[in-house]
Length: 391
Image 1 (cartoon, rainbow, N blue to C red):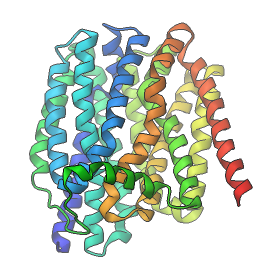
Image 2 (image 1 turned 180 degrees about the horizontal axis):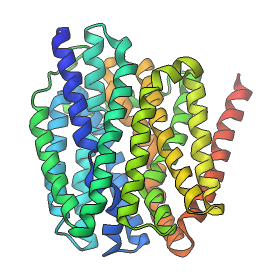
Image 3 (image 1 turned 180 degrees about the vertical axis):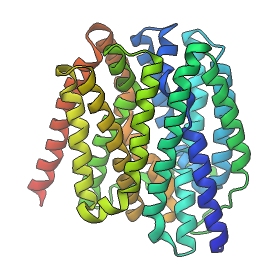
């Protein structure tokens, strides 16, 4: 691959990330579900979705490593286009569960594949030093897409509550067509037979546990990532709803937060150079935990500020996580390793989502946020103590 094709892959990656994250239901999905379901039922759907995504993460990562990242991305968008269109006209728990399973497969196919394709395109042309800047731009584009979709989605929902899902189906269909123009990198490509999938899955986890230093990095990234996963999947919108916001105000709030995050992402290379990867992870963890612990004791303005800071810090965390992970995994197993870390990050919440929903139904989102913040402090403290004793 020459540099021209690598640059084209990066450009298409920017476009696909924008379309993937210009997600119109982002600010209204909870309001949509609450028309038909309780928090406990939403927790059940979340559990099924995340268990499916995590069960499929490593096999689909291996699929991408074996058969190509491009085909994985194309199939991903095609599946999601069908699922989102059908979502708009569904009303029952079991139909939602089926659609979540289809979308889970699509998400799992996309997860890691696009990131690995872009990184290896740069590496093949000896431009991997540009990756930090690329992921900074990618995160900015992602947040801009989310901001646009949040503001428009919240308002569109008030006019026609099914429209955000229909629009999303069209967007994903367009993305599937655009993904056909990607060029597959040749770097470290290997062809596997299907009976090697299990072996490849094991290798993905081995990449994350190569030595004590990498084990510590993996555990910290997984724990902090778990906190952001809970916030994104059930806490964020439910907290704002507890503060009394409707879909329009949630959409505007989300949009402002995402625009702030888009700006913050551009400072990532500077922040990494000044504070280092470890400093950025620690800073993100502190902001995340504070946003959970103090939410129950503040009013609307301070609560919105805490949530905005959490969203802004997530862009820095995602950037540094990607940079750290790609620095120590091999190219031929990159998509599998990325998927393996996502599995470690999301599986705990997948298994606990039903009791979390029940807890929120019987208490409140901010009460659960307080509990979660304390749990994260304990888990991170245990990791630090464990590795301090070993060193």
